[in-house]
Structures are given as structure tokens and as C-alpha cells.
Image (cartoon, rainbow, N blue to C red; front, side, top):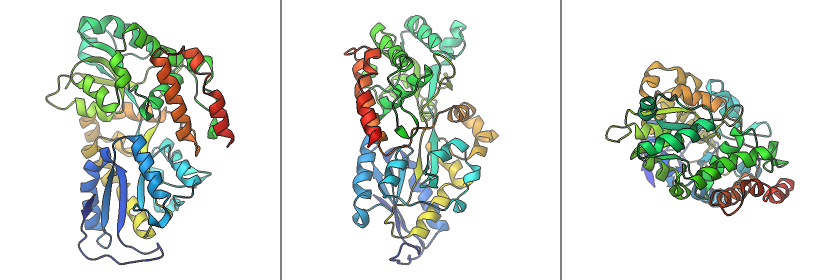
Amino acid sequence: MTGYAPLRASADGVDGSVRGPLILAAAGYLTGYLGPLLQGCDRTHPVERMTLVELPDSADETHTQMITDLSGGDRGRFDAPDTGVDWTSEFAAAGWIRSLPRDRFPLKSFLSLVLVTATCDGRLYGVPFVTNAGLLLYCKDVLAEEGVPSPLAWAEVERDARTIAPRYGLDGYAGQFVSYEGLTVNAAEAVYSAGGTICGEEVRYVTVDSAAAGEGIGLLARGLREGWIPRAALSYKEEGSKQAFQDGHLLFLCDWPYAYAVVSAKGFPVAGKTGAVTLPSLEGSGASVLGGSSLAVKTHARHLESAERLIQYLTGEQVQRQALTWGTLPPVRADLYQDRKLVRRFPYLPTQCAAVLATPPRPKSPHCDQVGLVVQVVVHDALAGREAPQQAVHRPAWELHDTARH
């Protein structure tokens, strides 16, 4: 836990309406640049004291710790949790976070799609802080040497991974295939690319048991079976897959855009040799899964006014710019994707913007976590060869239907 002292003492309050000290909780991968941002907030908001609680890097572990704290009512530590975009409906339905006044935040400046992730039943329960959509990273020097364009379709990825990668001593393609939240994302992207879906609106009905879903998961299973996806990918989370690409062992990598910024740094074998495109398709358009986070206010927050002022500060244009340049995570403000200086420094920004705008919104439900757990188990079995993909996508249907009814 890291505290940032204000310039003068804060005022106490007991009804949550006045200003005073706050505790912001965020996943560990965010805290490296949130600390300096909060120091800036202390300088501009001197009556509040901001304390940052660092949670695990793992989304699954962060989700668990947030539930433990938020469900503790006024006994919990957190005032303002930085929540994953698919947790907003869950936390709102449980009564753990407050609805927020729309007119206090610069919502008209945001990418329209990301705002949808922060609402539940038409009310605002969080303010988007950063957004994310997966990209396909590739070794552009290798494809240029072969006279091959960057791929638009999965058939091209498969062809190049099967034929070109071995000639350069590379593995073909990898994502994040351990049975965790990252596999849920990879599975959904494969299903979307085939024209399928996981479940219907508000998770009221299940659509994963379809031929399209089987085709999407089948593509990944075939890659592992035939070897153009390495077996090591079954053990990859974000860091492992990024490491394999940045060390020059992969031709293609599906990952969040932060990976592009990291692997492009001087000293890595792929620095200056990496390209990025939106995810490929099997039919129609490829689509990622919308990631990112929203800043929420706990129902039992000690100082509501201070919490809202903190969110205003962190979603302001200057801080959003700093969050990108210091943390390499995409901003929620639309105008920054047109900023020439930022595009020169982060050339993937236009591609990232297109990927975000083409991404279908995640289903909103208090049960999304259960849905993700079911999908992880089923898809991992299919990828590991324990079950045929077309059979595997039918297996969880009754469980998801049962989840949707309750």
C-alpha cells in the first residue's frame, strides 16, 4: 500500500458527502503509473489524501479480492475500486457500488462504445478509465521478406504460421490459453471471428452451442493439434505469451495493445520489426473482446464528493494522456486517438481505435463470472484434445441456461 500525503490536512466527514481521504484499489499492472497520477491529484485537490491499494496482476485474483472487500460494507478498506469492465453489472446488482451523476463527468468526450460498459439498467455505475481491444501482433520484417501482406483472415494466419514461420525457426501463433479469464477472451474472439456468439443480451439465453462457435474453437484446437500453435501456449498467460514474442520465438501473437508498446522498446529482438492489425476473421469481420476498466464508488465510501472529484481528475484530458504515455494502456477519450504526437509515438493507436469501435459489447449480467468459468473449462478441454470442439461447445449449454434463469 502506498500513501501520498496532501499539502494540508483533510476534513473529516461521516455522511459520505464532504471531502476527505480516499482509498483507491486497482490491479497491480495499473499501479505503476497510477501512483504518480495520484501525486498530481494531491497537488490539485489538497484537502483529500489519496491512498493506493495494489491488488494482484491476475484479473481473477483482483476480482476475488474486490468482492471480499466490497461485500464487507462499511468494514471494507476501498472507497473507489478500479473495476474490470465486465464486473460493473455484478457489483451494481449486489448493491456494492453507487450510481453516479452523468453531468459530473466528461462522458461526451469518450468513445461511445466504452461508455456502455459502465452502465446498468440505464444508470451510470462507473466512469471508464482505460479501454482495451486485442490486436494481432506480427513480425513485419519476416512477412516483408516473404512478400506477404499483413493478414486479414484466419486462413492467412494459418497458412503463414504453417509455412513461413518454420523457415525462420519460429513458432506460428499464440494467445493466452491457460484456463483463466484470458482464455475466456481468446475463446470469445475465436467464436466472434466465425460469426458466433457466447450468449445473448443480458445472458438471458445461450448461443455458444452453435456450428459457428465450434468452428472458431476448432480453429485453435486444430492449430495445437497440427503444431502451428505451440503446445507451450496452453500454459501462456499475458506475460508468457508476450515474452515468447518479444524474444523472437513467434510469428503472430494475439494480445492487448500494451504488448506492442513493450516489445517495441529498444533492446528486444523484435523492436522496430513489429506490426499490429485488428484481429482476423473466419467470415465477416474479426472482433476482439472489449477490455479496460471503470472507476466506481463504493456504496459505503466515506467521502462521496472526494470520490467523484478523483474520478473527474483521472478522466480529464491531461491525465488520460499521461495514462497512455506512462502506462501504455489506451485512453477512453476519443480525441486522443487523433493526436499526431501520440500517433507518432504509438503508431498502433488508429488500429486500436478501429478495434475498439468494432468490438461487440460484453453481455451485462451479475453472472458473467460464472459464464466465463464454464467457457474456460470447456475450451481448455477442447484445445488440449480431450474433447472435439463441436461437441465441447454443446456441453456447457445447460449450465449457462441455468445461470441465465437465476
